[in-house]
Image: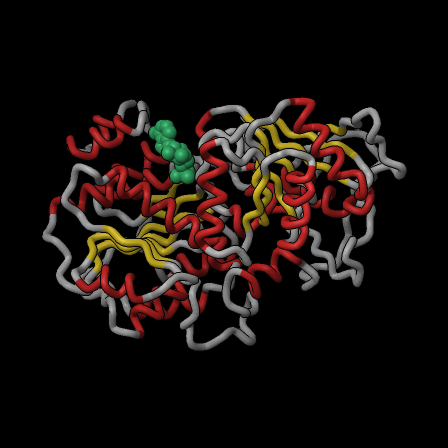
Length: 452
Ligand code: AMP
């Protein structure tokens, strides 16, 4: 299968070839013809599958055939949860659309609104936006959607996790009812299906990664280690394996800053990326990481979400995430587009419950490798462990599909309480990078005017 057989025209095929893409990824092979036909699409696909080109290429093709957007109008709207993801989709659109006379713009919160208003004044064919800032712009009458043909909800599951459901519903009300809808989500929970019901019409359903499984090209293992020894073990591993580009995940912004400083002190170029960093600082860190100036990028889950870093060889979980599905998202940063990668977790005895939740979700027992000189003083038993933050309320994810476990180690089932709020990732989602709001119902902010 080649891109030429998918129904795309020469300007787009040339741009795709210039990107070095030779064959369409499975999601592209399925989504591109469906979108070109004007069908609604509901796709289960994670970052790393090539989903962005899966929707942007056919949208560009369709828009190239029509007339340009009039002032303050938008013809295709792509909603996405984070600034980074919005910027990356925007960059992809520029690259794929470079031989077409279409205009695109990216709008997100945390930066000045006036340049965005100015950009929208002349009309844009494709707008990539985070929900809060888009509502703000709409409220200020900087944009309207009378000419909208296509809506994309990208990473819909994450948008719901981040509490954007009310914003999304408010945006939907402002859109013309006759339009094409494309819904992309890593997972299809009940909540997403509920949202989809009122959104897509007779959709083509596409699934390219089975739910909650991890890419086969990613080799995963665990190093059991004492909590206090984790920084030393990380520097040891970086030196020992001469890792040149490592993405390290932390639960908290604070932890990310601390670890980044520790690495710098050990002579390893590092930068932290999280919600308290300015957009400029984040972009600088990401660029430095991509160019090789920065060897270790230390990120919180939400900041790392959707980062487009090609074929990242190493991902390290310095701490396991509280929410098991975040593990799948984290390691989705490596082994992308068929390249192999390593996902390594440094796990201390206190993280037994989180480990059990992850192993249930991915239905695998992760291999334990103890490193000489870093043997833990307390054995790692998945299913055990107390919340390192104290106060209980730890979330343990439900077993999926019966939650069978393999392996003969003495693991006990993680029976943490459901839905606790002592969750730094959730706290960051709610209070850090985005607006303070609760995940479901309740006390969300009403006016949607802050930056997303
Ligand atoms: P995405 O899942 O959209 O985040 O894309 C993941 C990565 O795969 C991006 O870096 C793309 O540039 C790259 N990519 C997308 N489509 C292809 C393709 N057909 N061949 C090779 N790389 C691709």
